[in-house]
Image 1 (tube, one colour):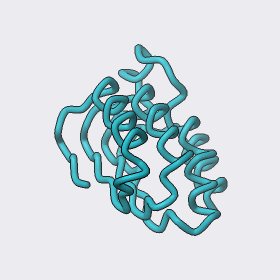
Image 2 (image 1 turned 90 degrees about the vertical axis):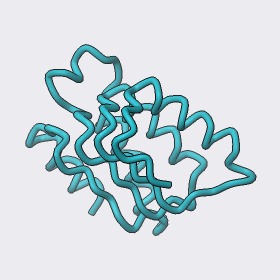
Image 3 (image 1 turned 45 degrees about the vertical axis):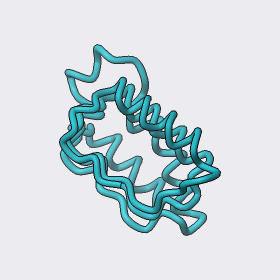
Image 4 (image 1 turned 135 degrees about the vertical axis):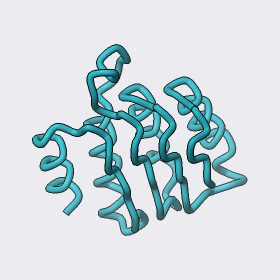
Length: 119
């Protein structure tokens, strides 16, 4: 599913996740590309919920979404830190094969913690 540059924002990301979770028994996706949608921390926190039931997701691209930035501070949620446990579990189970998180203004500590968590 390619929804790059669709201006989803945090609210659209939440609606997308809710729709995917509601239809999980009928339609499971293997690829989700949501690059450049301004999801911020809140959207990333919503996205983490997807990994609790979407075991078929093999490719995730959330690049350039300002997940952690000064702009994100006005939105609730822990952003990348909420995604880490879900991404780690998915990678450990062998389902997640490709992940792109570049250009999200991650602090060095968050980026390092994320890489260590996923390895």
